[in-house]
Length: 436
Image (tube, rainbow, N blue to C red):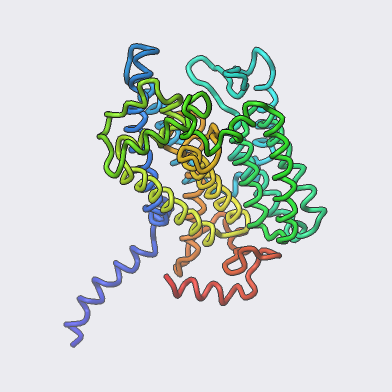
């Protein structure tokens, strides 16, 4: 019997030792959310195809090179993917050290872009820095900055967020970037960032009566900003009338987008066969690329896009629920909310569910700054997810000091947790291990 069992033991013992003695790099790879990576890669690849298809006519008219916008999008994507991979490997707790610096730099950028001869003005809006080779849009940077800065502020304040004093201080911080972006005449980005700020406040455990009050006040202020600008008011007054407007003198983009979606039908007219991109639909490769997807790939194509973003939302929510600490929960939840809200606003505007707004479709629309920042945000999300997966594992692993500090304050149960801690951390931890 001893002769028969000894080979089994000799083979089994090295296997167990190999599982325990993983290198740090191997542990990091083992904790990566592979599904999230696959989904991002698929959406980005699809975006490149659609950018080329939607922009080839415009690119040829403007530059003589039909792949001009496609080539630039590839370059932006390479930069964004590199940043995503770096941030996915970098402990997200390091953002705590640099959050104030990041916030200050972003505010300075938002101020500088409003200065004549520094910020580039297009169609009455001053939103970009023209750096020659590239154009930098500070409002796209501000979205991620708001999540980082306010996420730290909320995680540091704890239960103060449940008082009017905490709400007041939080709103003051949020108003700074929101007001500056609104001054750039970028109402779409203003709405998205304000909504993300509200989601962060909800995740931090604010009282419902405070959230409802802020929603009502914010809605009133939003309406005042709309009626203050004639072009915004025109978008509201013609909303829902674009198809019945025989002259097509108003809501031109919305009308053409609906025509494209209707022309595509179930299966579309075929990739590359859109007619809207022949100067019929302005911004076909940026804000209204979803209409080109519907025209060329039909309902099947648009439904696939919605399913892909729904899957990304699920993985993001899952990462937030499993985050090692309060800051990780707010960070991953804010990033997920940012991507989802921006996607909803873009798709809803193209399909005439809401008035037209200038918001790109994440990972798919053409645009350098937006694409790079979206991918950078996903890198942070992947790191939060990886640390949550490692801590959920029953095996003992080595953590850095800042990771260990986050692990000690893990909130497994009470995510809107008033004090940010589980009522029974031990029980929460046992249940999580059991599920795995």
